[in-house]
Amino acid sequence: MKVWHKCIVSIALTISCTSSLFTQEPVYWDVVQQIMQEAFENSHVMENASWLTDVFGPRNAKSPGYIAAAKWARDRLQEYGLADAHLEPYEF
Image 1 (cartoon, one colour):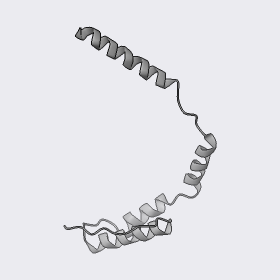
Image 2 (cartoon, rainbow, N blue to C red; image 1 turned 90 degrees about the vertical axis):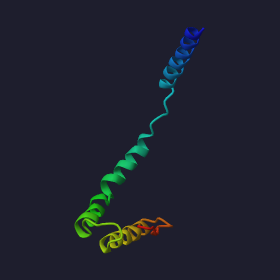
Image 3 (cartoon, rainbow, N blue to C red; image 1 turned 135 degrees about the vertical axis):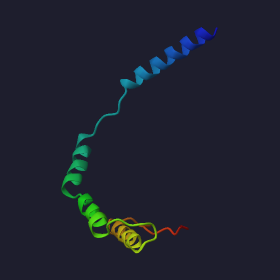
């Protein structure tokens, strides 16, 4: 009885997995192109990474460098339009 149960379950899993392969969502290439264009032309990743590594450098938690970097990151996120960018206090 257990063998039949395992066979039925394995067949059902095989059918469900193979049927999902044929029902993929369409790719909207115009949206992909817009995302890639934004990433390559308007990206601030390297500038932000440079500020965090070269300007603020290594920092320990609650050190002056950490606090300055956290405030800079909060201000940068607000510049990008994040409405509720704020610092969270925590016990060390």
